[in-house]
Length: 129
Image (cartoon, helix red, strand yellow):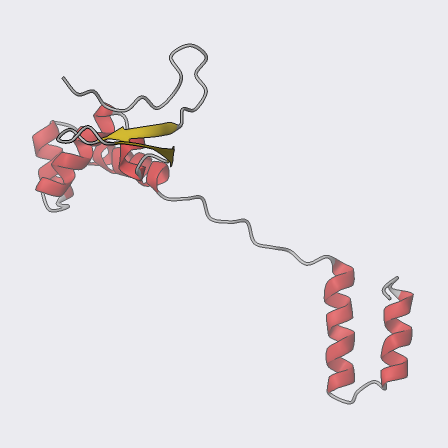
């Protein structure tokens, strides 16, 4: 009987690494570092929900009927799976005030509003080199 790949260590709960695969026909073994597919990280309930969602062609009303739960529950389960599968959005990189001020000064020099010497003076005042 084939089991689902363990997602965490049964002793301490830390993440596990897949390091070996084997051909069921010729017994060839390959050892390397593998990561599980994104869907392999879903728990049994989430996998079942996703299977029903796909076979219902994404029709949430049909999923609602098959599971016997409310529409908000279906949405919540779908959002949970999306959160598990979708990588988090990277936080927007915020420029430090001195960096954006230097950029503003350099742009003013490029437009001819400041001379190069005036621009360098202003940048030095900001602590830049």
